Length: 431
Image (tube, rainbow, N blue to C red; front, side):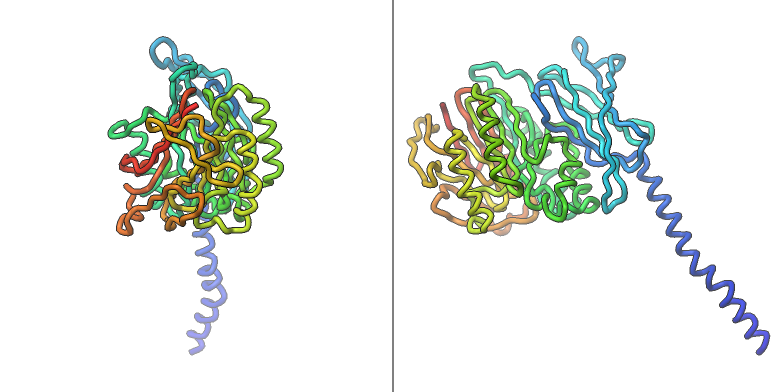
C-alpha cells in the first residue's frame, strides 16, 4: 500500500502538471501554424473610385503579415497587348488595424495618370515579401457627347452571414450579370452597392471575409460601395473604411454626363446636404444626377421608422432643388419603384413612345435584396410598382434582383433583372 501511495503522490506531483501543460503547448503550436498559414494571405482586394475613374483608381487590401511594403505592380499595355517588361511599381500607404481575426495590415494605393478605356494586369504585395496572383483592372473609357452610353449594375442588401449565402446569392448573381450570354446590356462600367454589404459590420472574420471570399469578381471590376446601417453597427464604419479606399463614407464622382453622389444615411445628414450643394455647384456641366443611399425616403417596410421619416423630411426637398433624376435605395429588402416625387407629392408625367421626356420630379428605386433576407413589399402613396417572387422562389438564387442602369447624354434607363436575366421592370427618362 505504501508503494501505491508513493506512486500516486509522484503522479500527482509531476505528471498532472505536465498533462495540464500539454494542451497549452498544443494550442500554441496550432496558433503558430495558423499564423504561419496566413503568412502571405491577402484579404478583401478590391478597387474603387477616388478621382476621375477614366484615369485614377483606388485599391485596398489587407494582409495578416507585414513586410513594411505596400505596392502594386501593373503592366502597361504596349501596341496590341501586355508587355511584362513594362511593369510599373507604385507604392502606397499602410495602417495597422485590430480585428477579431487578429492584427491586419491595411494597404491602400491610388493609381493616377492611367489611360482611359484600358485594361491592365496587376499584382499586389502580400505582406510576406511576394506578390499576389495576377488580376485585371480597367479604367473607364472616354465618353464622347452624343448617344454614347454606359451601363452600371446596382445591388443592395447582400447582408449574409455565411460564405455559402454570399456564394449562393451575390456571387451567383454577379457571375450571371457579368456573363455576356442572355443579357440585354453591354459590359458594365462598374458595380454599385447601396449598403448592408454585411449583416454585422463589426464582424471581420465571419462576414467581411466571407463577402470578399465569395465576391472574387471585385478584384477585376470597379466597385462603388455605400455604407448601410449594418456597416455602421458595432463600430463597423472602421471596417468599411479599412476595406474601401473611398474619400469618406460619402463621396462623389463624375462619369460622362452624370454626377454620382454616394450618401451615408447613418451619418450627419445636414452636413451632407451642404456637401451636395457644393458638389453640384462645382459640376454645373453635368446633365444627370444620380444619388445612391441606403435608407431611402420613399421605401416600404421601414417607411415609418423615425430615422427614415427624418430622412424623408430632409433630403427630397434638396433633391428637388438640385435636380436629382434617380435615387437608388436599399434597406427595405423588396423591389419598389416610386412615382415621380416632387415637393413631397407624387406628380404626373406623360410617357411618350416608352419614355418620360423632361419629367418633373425624382424616381426612387429600392432594389430587392441580393441576400437571404427578403421582406414583403409594402404599398405606400408614393409606390407605383412592386415585385416579389412567389413564396416558393423567394430564396431561389435565380430570383434575386439587380438594376442595370444605362446613361447617355440624351436619356437614362433603368432595367431591373432577376439573376437569370429576366427583366421585371424598367423606366426610361429623356432630356
